[in-house]
Length: 414
Image (cartoon, rainbow, N blue to C red; front, top):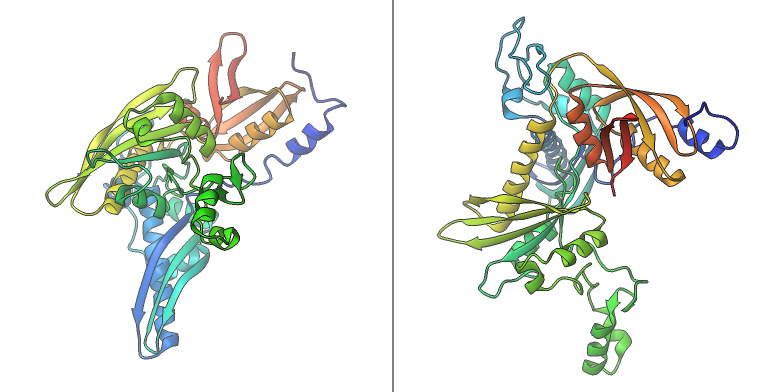
C-alpha cells in the first residue's frame, strides 16, 4: 500500500526533489553531430578557417534537421491557415506547417552550443579539419516549433552490430564491413548503432594484463626477449573477441549473442551479413531483442547501395531512423495526462526510473503524488499516444504496462 511520504526515505526524497530540475542527458545524445569534414580556401589562413568553421556549422545543422524530422515535414504540404489531415497515431487534427526554410549561417550559429576540432591541417590559404558539433536542445526545439514542424528527439534502444562479411568462410573481426561499423560514429543517431570492436576489454578483467590478452603477451615474449618493449606496441583487445567466433556469428548463436549484448550493455543485437556485387554492396540479417522473458527476432530486410561498406552502414542507420521517426513522431494535438505507479525494489531502481521518465521527450510534466519504499504514484502530462510514450520509455530502460489491480505501472526493463 502506498502512503504519503514520511520519515525514513530521506535519500529517496532528495532524489525526488531534483527529479524534474532538468533533463537527463543520454551518453550519446542525438543533439550531437560528429564526423563533419570541413575544407575551405581563402586569400589567407584566418579567412579560410573562418569560412570552414561556418560551413561546418551549417552542414552539421542540416544533418541534425534531417536526423530529427521526416522529409514530408521538412518540405511542408499545406498553406498557412489550413489544417492537415488527422495524425495517424492520435487521430487529432494538426496545425499547418509550411516546412523549414533553407538554413543560413546565422540560423545555424543560434542553434550551436559548442564544437570540437580534430585532425587540423592548414596552409596559408587552406583549412581542413573534422568537427563535432553540439547543439542547444532548447534552441533546436524552439526552431522547429516556430515553424510548426514536428520532430523526434527520443532515441531508440541501442543496437550492437555483429558484421559478417560474406567471403566464403566469413569474416567478423576484420575486413571493410567490420571497419565501417567500428570507425563510424552512429551512437548519436535516433536509432543508435554500436560497432563490434568499438570498445575494448576492461584492463582489470580476468585473463588480461593491462589492456592486452595474456596470450598476446606470451606471443610477444617469444618473439622478443624484451617483453615490456613488445607489449607497448600491442593493441587493446576488442570487447567480446574471446566470446564471439566467426562460426558463432554465422550461425547466430543465441547464447553467445546474449553474452555479447551483456558485455556491451545493450539488449539488442543485429547480425548483419554483407557482400559485394557488381558496383554495389548489400546487407541483411536478423535483429535479436533480449529485453523480454523470451528472445524476439526480427528479419532485417535486404538493403543494397551503390557505394562502399561505409555508405551501406549509413544507409541502414538512415532506414532504421526513418522507421523510428514514423513510429514516434507526434503531430499536433493537446496534452493528455495519466496516473502511473512506478515500482522498484531499491534506491538504484528508483533513480533509474526517474532518469527514464524525466528524460522522455513526450513527457512534459510529472507530479509526484505519493511515495513509499517500493513505489511512487505520479501523474504524467504527455503528448501523443500512450503507445508512443511506452515505446520511448522502453528505449530508456523502463516498461509501461496496464494491470488490472494497479492500472498503469512503470518498471525497469530486465
